[in-house]
Image 1 (tube, rainbow, N blue to C red):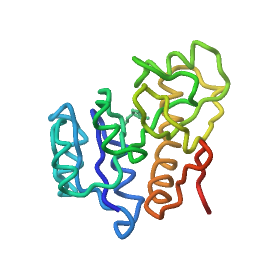
Image 2 (cartoon, rainbow, N blue to C red):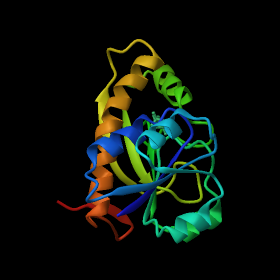
Image 3 (cartoon, rainbow, N blue to C red):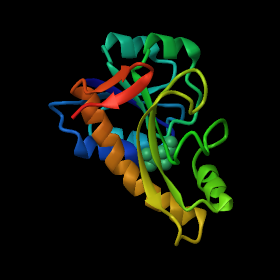
Amino acid sequence: MKIAVFVSGRGSNLKSLLEKVPHSKAQVLAVVSDKIDCRAFKIANEYKIMTYSVGSIEKLKEKEVELIVLAGFLKKIPDEFVDAFKNRIINIHPALLPSFGGKGMYGLNVHTAVFNSSAKISGATIHFVDKIYDNGFIIAQKAVDISGLNSPEEIADRVLAVEHELLPYVVEKFSEGKVIIENNRTKILD
Ligand code: GRF
């Protein structure tokens, strides 16, 4: 399956995808960013993957990209783009949606809100992208116990570790055609 990964910063989820999903199942053909000097572009360069600035929808179509993965991409995806890749854009969010999502809920903002709520669990969510922030059908979630943690940064680290497991798992399943939508619910087949 041909994949494009959209990033804005560090790129650790991009790296975990490249390391953990076999190339025979998923090929990352393009890394797209709104910030051309981001660290994720360095990772793409190391893996000799083409990098693009946003606004390259035609190029992604030309390359016959089948799945777009938002991995720390901070900009809103334009509606036309969501229509062009219907049910083919997924996002990783560093909390358990539908809580702690929406506009402005990214990076440490999310973990600070979780910390201040005194919630005892957090986790990672992978969901389809629709036209509203963090709103599309949830595909997979993994929870972590944060009851003993003392700062948003500690929560971020614990959640990131599960993100690095969950995203490669979902992308591999997607590449096998095992992520399905049925009766308005998503399912991951064995
Ligand atoms: C991750 O926590 C991801 O869930 C969120 O932004 C962060 C990106 O981290 N959407 P990285 O760029 O993959 O290291």
